[in-house]
Length: 194
Image 1: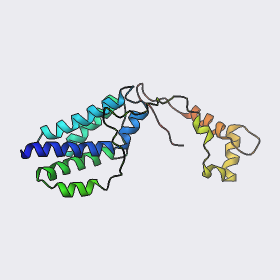
Image 2: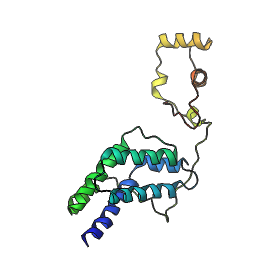
Image 3: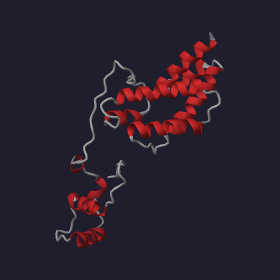
Image 4: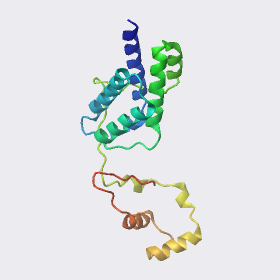
């Protein structure tokens, strides 16, 4: 009976953590897992639950490796924001607490997570928006940092860009960056900062 309670409660914990994982949701919303990305995300959540319940002495590194590999294989995504180590640390900590029936303490900690809608369910539909390779939406966005340009740097940029107006336009700067950009290996996507 205690094992059944543990499994049921730990399942809820895993669901709560995965429903709050923004990187996973963004990967699904941006079509990184294809049209069935939401189902793939649910399968990753289910597999993680089974892996945690089915193995007694998992290290954080082992669990982290499993989730990183799943994200890479299924979503072609690497998470550099330290969310995966944090998720693994919390899953293993909550697993130990759940095995010790410390559910009130777990619930108190999980209640601090943002209250969002559970999206990792088959009855919830996530809008699939594939990412275009041609991103013209950046052209519409203005950064305040660029409007206050250093006159010395503007002169240097003019010489490089071959303009006589005294100011480099965003499209000219992008063109220069594109000329300097080296294509990544096949199968990889490089996301550059603005």
